[in-house]
Image (cartoon, rainbow, N blue to C red; front, side, top):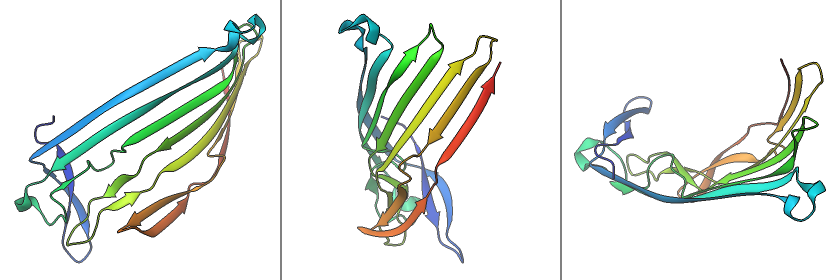
Length: 181
């Protein structure tokens, strides 16, 4: 239980602006489960192969004082808090050869991007699925080369208000090459 958590409050004006005010009360309750295992228990040669992940389930609620602002709802989930987050990973990590290749998956549940004001519903960011791949190789001269490809699915970040999609943004893919000493 949080005492006086800070929450965004939209203030009226020629252009909407976002400000912050202390809330009357807020609760954030959750549980996280995590696992990781290597395949070496099946065959010794598969020891570098691994899978892992975690899932977090969260229930949040904030109570705002009606006198604090022009928010549409005085009771709602915490802004920016997803009800769930799921991360999965699988790959090959061989410290002897200095070689690592990992695929990563992440998704989060719908979360309030902006609190509703003046009777408008809250603006929600819908679940976003992301897949990344990271490969690295340690060279004999003490240099490590790393290649990272992010957001391979290139799905749009989607925002909805009152059940209607109001914005979509493609974040794009990225390929990053790094060299470390």
